[in-house]
Image (cartoon, rainbow, N blue to C red; front, side, top):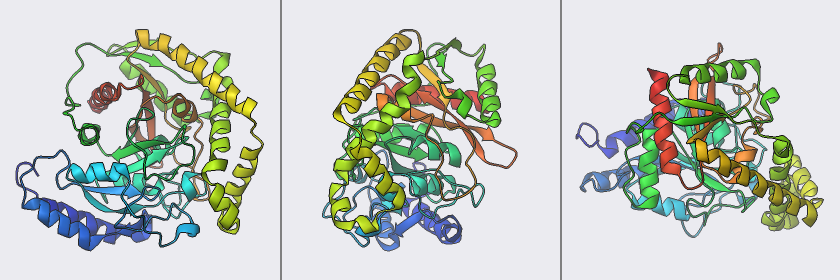
Length: 411
């Protein structure tokens, strides 16, 4: 586009054509605004390129408010709902020149009850969740960038299952106003794209400041803490083999140390779940009181479990998170980032579940920035991925290291 070989209207039309060809099969979208997206693309093509996302079509997870498009939060309760204003994150994208193409499928209120989306790599397999449509739309080339959210593993896991780059920022990295809450202490905005370098453009759009090129080589070989986590046994043999292969390829290219969390970490996933459930009771109180019959059985059961989480259990969960953050402070003294599995394996068969966030809950609870990076496919053509975890508020450095690892593995 910068060279003039492609304009925004041409790119938007190509995306719309791809959606028309493929979405009857993939079912990633809840709404596509064809007329308005082409109108905005034409208007942007008449302007000088001064913004980082000038003319780039972007998809928005349907948990995020859009004034010009319906926002149903994955629930029949809000069918046809038209918010009065765009979410803060959508306003930032528009200010950065983006074309908002439409809304993508989310699970019900960004919890686990899935929508109709299929994994683009093998129909009948889950794309993950809760950002199901966003991950699938990017993976199937409907759109180059999409927004998602993560409360447990809702960006990293679908990115891993769909074979795209997924980024969950440091907790609080950008405003969440206009994003339907599930657990305000955990909810975090995320991004899907197909190459790491695009994350730098999105980060620039949100920060308003130039971001160092993600392709810039590190000044020295990175120091990597290899963390199989206390849940290594939950990963399947394919994930074990692929993760160890990546570690083997890193030897000689980086300084590797093992980070083996002690027994303090064994209940960290239960701590994340306790906080999420307790906060979800308050976040969805009105929907539960007024429309309980329109909530899925699984969500109703989670809210009932959340009512049984007492203040002492919640306090203990938050205290555990503090102890684990203090332990990570020691890890960062000797490491630039942590390398961990992104998911237990490839996307499971079936659409009734979105997979297990066992390798994501802990990092979401601790608030660290995370990036899912594809590392090939299994024999069935389904993607596998690793996860990079960085120190709080060092997201741009983590993006640069992810670009370095992406290039190293491609060599």
